[in-house]
Image (cartoon, rainbow, N blue to C red; front, side):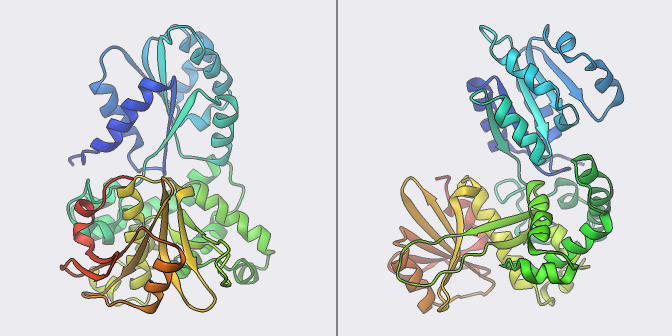
Length: 385
């Protein structure tokens, strides 16, 4: 099976490794971190040393990490670094050597413990890069990407049935094995039930009280479930934007299953016909397009919001960059029309532009600074901010 080139991510990693002694490549399990790192190592001049910390032999080699790592030169890759937390203080020492004889690329599945250790121990010495699933600049088939999701092995599978089997296996292994290795003490059956409930809640505003009632626990306890799945890229929380605009605004985040293919598997959907006839088809499309926009713009989570007022005005995605605000509405329709809510968002939030992303084929103006964009043309229409 051929790999999908991930040129933009390679370019970014090369830049960061020139500027920082340690780079952390973070993302969900099976999203392609190791493949990307191997492509990077193959393109670099000089030595490259690889440690796979899921391999008992490599883990044993690092029983005394200073003895093994200190003499190395060139690029050193530590894959699944959260399995060896004691290496971070040593990396700080190695990063501070004169002329920096080695650069370290650490790969992790973004457990909260890993993020905390790297940020505290390596402050000022580490850069972070998050790897999402395949996006529209990498995968040419928009509908296939939506239906199967962005995990490379799911997108590239030989058939819809094979893709679904891969996703079912991923969900089972993720819940029964991976989360435990990342420090979760919650039973896999509880997390499966919670994740499945989130799939049915996909695209709605978080209601911890209702989830807590369903699980018979407090809203603060169920919030920890949500934060756990968010920290390992299984769920996306889109935080609310609020400011003093003279209107009562919604203060709850919107929640999305992180990958559209995993969403469809959690909803027990395999074929296109099953997806498009399901009540969550609109929410699935919205979450998928929101994710693609964020990837195409190259913005960080703390630059992305949703906005809504209690009077009914709302905006699916608000992106802030360089002091400017950009709005996006997502419609699974062939030819969306201008609405009062769009006008309200444009004026109230003082947007630079509002794009209405739709499922049709025509690009056209709805009003000054409001344009309709076909989802299939997003990669050409949107440039990194």
